[in-house]
Length: 149
Figure 1: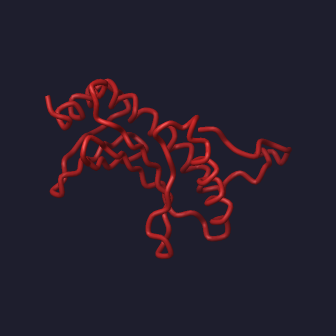
Figure 2: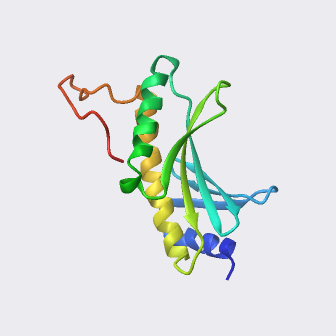
C-alpha cells in the first residue's frame, strides 16, 4: 500500500476529516470542519501544513514571540512547529507537522496527526485573531504567560 493510499484510507476512519483530494502539483489536501491541511511529500517524509492566517499588524511582535516560544517547547510539541510564510508580504502564521514515513506510518497514524493538528490549528487561529496572550485572562485577571497547545 502506498503512502497516498494510507492517507486516503484515513478519511472514513475519522469524523473530523471531511474530504481528501489530490492536486495537479502532487500535493494532497485534507479538509476538516475548520481547517485545510496541505500535505507535501518528500523523501521518506510528509509535511502537513495549515495556514492559520495573518496576524493583526498591531499584535505581530507578540504573536511572533508566541510562535517562537511554542517552537522552543520542542520536547513537548514533538513534530509540530510554527512558521511565518510570505515574510514582509502579508505575513501568515503556519502550523507544520513533519512526519517520518516508517514502519509505524498507517492510516490510523494519519488520523491521529490530522485530529491533533486540527485541534491545535483551531486554538492557534483564535490566539492569532485576538493578538496572542497578553498575560491576562479574558476577564482581565492575571493569567498564564503562555498557552500550551
